[in-house]
Image (cartoon, rainbow, N blue to C red; front, top):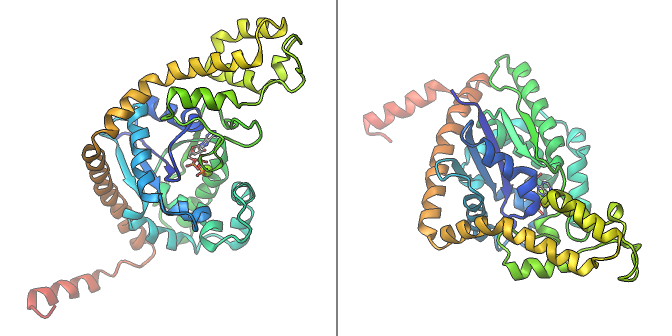
Length: 343
Ligand code: ATP
Ligand code: MG
């Protein structure tokens, strides 16, 4: 049997370069080797978007187009979190295995509440890593391709595995491992925060070539270089970091021209944008093909969601059994009533 990958993204907007280098490239690379479950986490959007949730469902479609655009095959299992109610049931059970102090210590949750300006965190926000553990463990994941910000959540998930198995005396769950992408955290174009859908500091995979030029044009460069004739300092230039990630082969000539002031910051950024546009060209074309066939995209999601429910239900049968919450006699009584025509 193939080992399993489980990972996903929130439906807060279209996917961007951070997703590509943080997690999507690993998913594409490993999709044939593993059985893959890709969750679009719509419930998790409510953590910090409770008052601006109008696009949750529309964004599910956008994320699906991004997935298919980067080359994830339609045969994988793609599903919507809220449409697999077994996940909410498992979240409820897990919530009794984690102390309040433990969830309040999670550094990613603290960071996100500050980053997105949420002063009063809801119970759902503080506890979302527990819900995420349910998403992962319902499918008995072995590997989770993700960015670095997910590490505390995966540690939490591993703790839940140990606590569940010890408490209920059955090895229902196994320990999943994180797989961090080639860039653990891609900084956004502001050079300050991580690239994020919610902070508008991103290059979306689906941005047009012109939007990409415009956005890269606003990127921070070498703050020590005041005039075009001044020699630049690639090692402290934020734009140069992007060269190292997205066009490493071009680094030597970019460095030489920057240090000798034969290239200006503006032209440097325009050239970087052209490189990005070339790299993203194939993804954008494939994405557009899928986006023009919405029925096909929804069919892929419907098939995946049905399959996700079946797999999660199998796990829930084991979970309820281990917890003494399966009530076979109750099920038999219900069956009898149907047969007797009294139900
Ligand atoms: P939001 O702003 O809504 O939180 P996001 O851009 O942070 O969106 P998520 O859906 O929270 O995206 O993250 C999904 C996956 O993508 C996670 O594995 C996360 O680590 C990874 N990821 C997101 N942004 C980056 C980034 N800038 N660098 C590396 N990985 C990232
Ligand atoms: Mg996020």
